[in-house]
Length: 220
Image 1 (cartoon, rainbow, N blue to C red):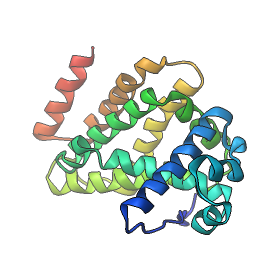
Image 2: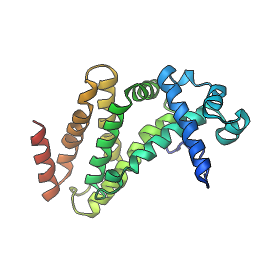
Image 3: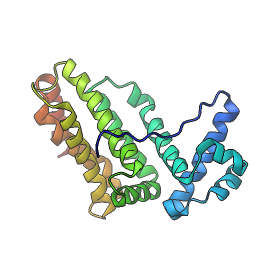
Image 4: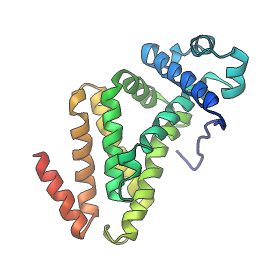
């Protein structure tokens, strides 16, 4: 999709009251997306349901697109900041912890996840959601691969950027299979973990590779 990176408008909230207002707004946006898809977002209704003046909402987010992107970005950020994700060892362990957290978020909010997946799969290559979801996946993967390489856990001479793109594609292919009804919702965490392990094992060496092979064996 080129070098262009989507920029999501972010507002710095300095007080608990402002942070709580942000949470209300973006929660309402996600509820509207879940109920009626992206086209169902109504800015006036969002303002009313979140107790914010319409003018204030436009001042904060500018447009319906900005609201959607902010709601998605906040959810992704929340997943990254979960204790078992942020506290995991940087590298392969953190990647697997993040992957598991994303899968469990899909199970916890399937209607929202399904709507966002359909929106993504139908989006043109220049749609900003592509970067927020796919681009973000690639960047996080590359960061963790860099850590794994520095720790001596990866084979030599890997193109980390290209590898991150392929691994991100593997992850999203599982979401596609679920979205198209080929994987049951409750099977998503196991399927994403299996996909990650099958992808990572050929790239790893030493103790890390042995750990991943053992983990894959436990899946059956």
